[in-house]
Image (tube, rainbow, N blue to C red; front, side, top):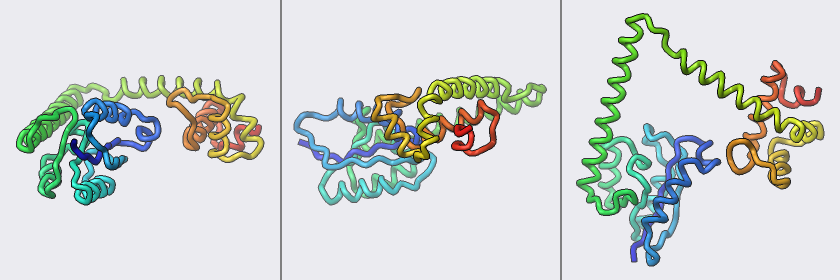
Length: 225
């Protein structure tokens, strides 16, 4: 039997709320664990992989030390994108297990991390060179991105307008974003993306309705018209 402390990292708060990224990590870890294994605790970090500020990771490490457990992660890139950071954590004397590479030694993890870091550097360098060359030839950069952004915004507004007849009466009653989210969830209404409403989801829906109305007023003022 092995004892583990599970550590998950998602890059944005939105991923954490929606389960995007987090669900895939959980699946990998569940597939790795044997019936006799014990997960004594789990910690979820909402932080970019470029940052070394990891409050939850240090909590996980301290918990693992206290309970003689190993840190279990789904994928190496969910842990960190820096070889130096991974090496520093390993020097803490805590066992690190990657569900995706269950038999990898510490030495092999260093190599995999180094290869991944170098590949990211090369990709970044090639991208910068390609953009510089395109700019030199007079290519207008960002055109496709702007078109895609406009299309996504239009689709988001259309989705929000579908919800307007349901959201507007709740706004008129003076309910807060949190209260509206609870009401929508209680009635089994689902947002276009995600499984349930959160206060921020409601706020975004109302903001998109405002955009359709061409209004720069507050969310409530727009829907109260």
